[in-house]
Length: 337
Ligand code: TYM
Image 1 (cartoon, rainbow, N blue to C red):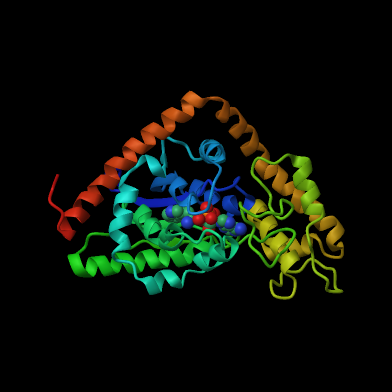
Image 2 (image 1 turned 90 degrees about the horizontal axis):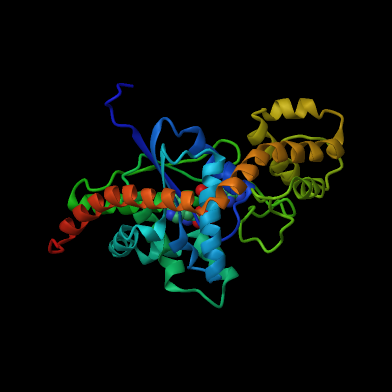
């Protein structure tokens, strides 16, 4: 690539609504880190999305900063990635409102995350939970990214973003770049260790189902040893997501952290059963997370450093975001300030 050629743009975010899990890492952050040098990168803490579900304010503040420390510890160098807090860039809320007016009730009603979250929070089905994808579209389109690296569960929201961008462009000309979702081959949907039918989630009430990035090695090993495997009689390590969802989930995790293929994993544990396999997956995950946990612990102690990172990030993000916002305001007919 010629030095002066503009790099393509990558953007993504994570809600600080719970502690980051192995799912957040394998489905999203790991891919961000691997592509850092190739792209111009924007990664943020989606705190505005988090309040669609009630949060304890002190815990939300703490987790937002922890998440930033963990992004850096995972390998996102703040010199090469713009790292910021969503609520520090007002353009997200501003474009979010505009895009609400270009997103259809029917589209929002079809979002599976809305259906799941409203079932789980039946006493608080608020407007923000419903219109959340319009804010997510704003998060994305403000930065004109080429790719949005996410896990499988966010694909539907990125597709809605594409539809909203196309609708807007159709009316006003080429305002937004229409981005592609970027989904990893393995690790795009890490399942709960205690219930392989449901996704590993930050907000899961059962802590045995999730592995957290900051978790102690002994707890990680214990959870993998107790991971639910399958009740089939064959008891061999074989990748078959329909028949053997528990073992297949562990294989996907092992593959994602070691880089081994499913065939290599089957050969490695041939004739050994689950007793040898489960602790081996646990050990491999411990070794992947150990440097992240240690580094995040160190960074978290340096509050002044974290502040300097998120302030510089917000400034750079605002500059880019405001350019898009000004264009949009002009197109829809707002009088220039
Ligand atoms: P969130 O916070 O639920 O998840 C963050 C990222 O982690 C991925 N992920 C998983 N991947 C594989 N297996 C799992 N078990 C797993 N759990 C989570 C998610 O797919 C996601 O990539 N709405 C988004 C946050 C957001 C956003 C954005 C993302 C707000 N604005 C703009 C991209 C672009 C969310 O709730 O992700």
